[in-house]
Length: 225
Image 1 (tube, rainbow, N blue to C red):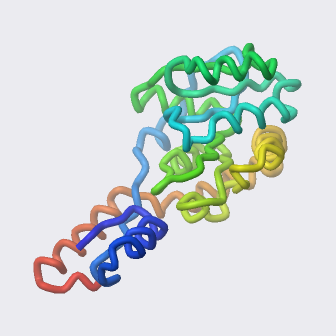
Image 2: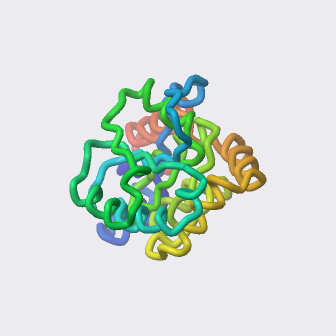
């Protein structure tokens, strides 16, 4: 049996491999309990939208920076926080866009402090071009923070109706999305409530139980569940 973390990755694997569908299963990722349990923030001196992830090209950060510059967030003094070390190319872009004083590279955090970073954010922006799952989407839900993500690959599947999904190739759409998740309090409350309702889907205990049922069925010669 093959285990995939989303229907999207399952479909992609089946198309590539030609394997029998009854041998390929989905077990969703869970979310670390730290995110739901931790009510502390880092008490930073400014409000911010958080991008949690690395700086690889498919993460779409140049478009995110350009969209941030086009949004209403800079004039509301809401900053953009990127995890990871200073990225010279992105820093140069931020300077050219006139937003360098509001774009921060905050380094890397352990799960406890990362949970605090999530909890203190106005919103999470995760407009990647490709993900097999997109764990920051559910980490934001667990942190009771509204999230904007992409309408491609696995991300709309993971988000359901609990996140604002946008075209990651459209700077205008990303900019409008940033305004919504960071400034529209009605929309923010709605996405937070939907995220809380959706969160039980991403429970490691449930995922472990499903994985065990699959392993048990394979051992018995089946693997149909």
